[in-house]
Length: 477
Image (tube, rainbow, N blue to C red):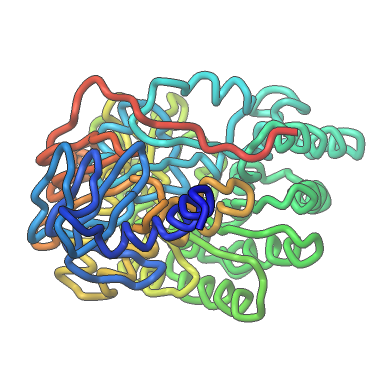
């Protein structure tokens, strides 16, 4: 055998050697996690293994001895892929800091998107703990074409303007946007043909449409079921993928019905998925179209069910009118607990925070989503298995994105050759601490978190002065 042939064959067996453990002292790595319970949702591995990381990748997964420059004893802890948040509005360090303490390693802005994809990615470079990526936004396209945000929310586009909106989206997708985001409830004058035309652009580029649907009330003619039917029809007509965001906050008491619609479409082969967050209140801007006249009847709630984010007071008619004129974040306590559980157990769902803190003000989903799933719904209520919860937080969002961005084929898994985006948590103690009174309180139980092999959480504490987050972007044309 020639030396070249021998080296070629040796290289082809490298993953096997890494998996099984090399002879004569074990496989070498830069960092090794020793003795943890490894969960890989793709292979359904649930086994005590040692994990080796080098150069930002997983290079060893073995029950044998593992040599490394640095070892971390993770006995009794779970090692799983870092969580991928597909609906993160908090794309900055304030939010990264609380989210890595909740096990998150990748954050995607796929509902609202960015007004300028190039500017957005340039602005994140070298500044992030987490990996990051963005969609383009139908809402931003409307604002660009129609003028200010008020016009974009309240005026229909004519035929020429509709073509310009579609062209805006087309240009952004050519610049590597990961998806097309829609906030149709916030843009009630968006014509159905306009939405269909933008879906067609998404289909041409092979990206999915991530939709906050047009309706999210308990009324028959304005329910999430009606809103989902609209975008399902657009997906069927154009061939675009569809992702419905935060279903319980739109479905409210009709969430089970909305989920059945998505599940039936998925069972018939349609490329449709959805996400949810594990809280019984939705959060939004009080000055938005969501709180236009008649909101009490639409949502089945009243002033006392709405909480002002800055002071956490429950509102009255007088304070509602005052704060609506002022503008700011509110939480509306309108989602039944059974809706959260229905979304958690649905075969169509993944987990997404819809979070975003600003100077500590916001919704507890921003800081506590994943720990709340693991602590409240897996350990305490046993609503789903630990493996299922991890899959919904990792593999499902990775597979949603891997067609448009191949980097995601290395995420959401614990396998040799995959990215070393890993979180290590104590399944017996992990729990959320964020509340509506204290939405920025970090979760507990996440002992170690690695982003691209760089440790960002060590023994439950943030590691300072590291910025390992890297861009995740589609093909630039």
